[in-house]
Image 1 (cartoon, rainbow, N blue to C red):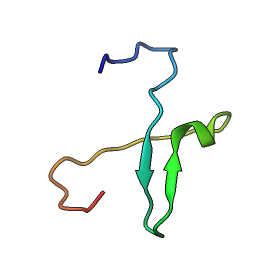
Image 2: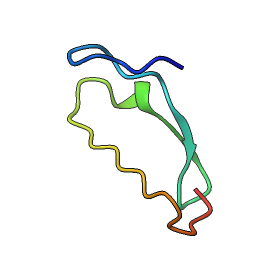
Image 3: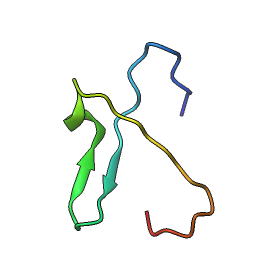
Image 4: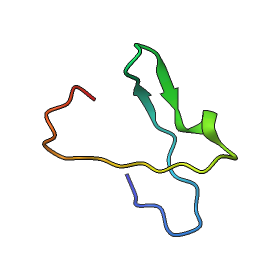
Length: 45
């Protein structure tokens, strides 16, 4: 997957939530979003 450049839309993500639902990045379009990944954090997500 190519890295998006500044100003481009991020690729759509589909991730599980802590309440057993799914969250898509596209569902949050129009809102400010911060995405943080913690490698080796030993979490199921």
